[in-house]
Length: 396
Image (cartoon, rainbow, N blue to C red; front, side, top):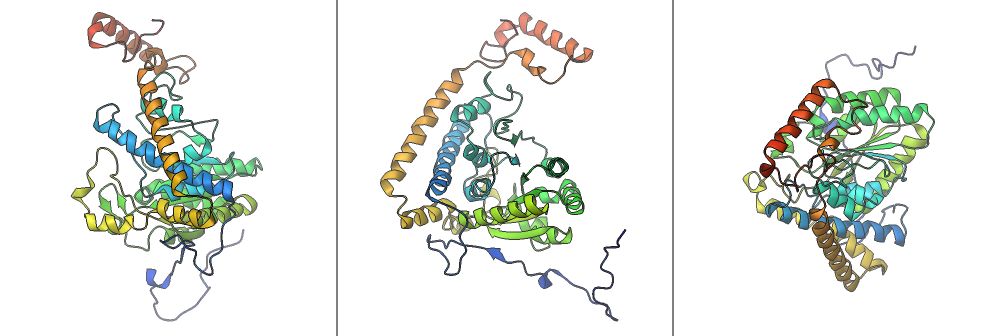
């Protein structure tokens, strides 16, 4: 076995300590804030059809997030998370993948799912936890999943998807499949132990995985400078022997280019890649959060000027692929469709109680069966406390 430790790469005879200032990580940027290209920029592989699909997904997600956040404030749903300001990160990177590449999301990547083709009705059925929800109403809102679209179901615990992505990619490698896994997470999740275990394993076993960090400045209310002292998250990839790239996360062309190149490395060379997308969460962390308590309006306005949607729109107009009439038409169409789908989903009954266990166990264990029987008896004894619009008894 070859000893890969670089103990004699550079021999010195007095102590020499290094720090992050000696590791300069460049940031890839293609589009300026005004939508024009940098003179020496290298464009991604993109045509009019792909560009318009990306932008229409931007508009759809903005409309969905606006309506669903308002619905939560009205008490129609219990919880929601927007991705306002971060749309270029997940949508632009997903656009670089093939449909059979696996997506493992954190919780703010509804744009990736929409780009893949998750229908508006499927979004609404999950958010309202009705009987048509693919997850059978077992998850809180925005915890999407779709086997058909290769989008692993989201789980609430932070960072669990990161080592799972390494494991899934290892399976792809052993099966000689020409695919990769992309794993999304925020810079706060990179403080979890799962992050370090996953990157170390991926670096050692050389598996086709893209770790995509959305560095949006805040882990809920904790700013990045209180999370870590090093040079962001990208520097950690270098430490684990992983190909690493930092990109302007509000520049969708740069994100697309970075991910296209990363996918080639992952699939063709079995090189794991870490991409750190520098972006900003313009909205609250979730509908349960008030960002005014930990950041100021001036900071937010600075980043609004770097809006990924506007920047890409200006580029599309310059190409002759977009105009204001199309903009208004698409926005209105999305608003109308979302309102209609929401009203329809609200009227669909909730899942039956038996769906608590279906597809989980072949035969439910005795203690859960006892609890299930006791719950049914309780509901039958106090039917007025459990309206038909709530969890329904099976076979009723």
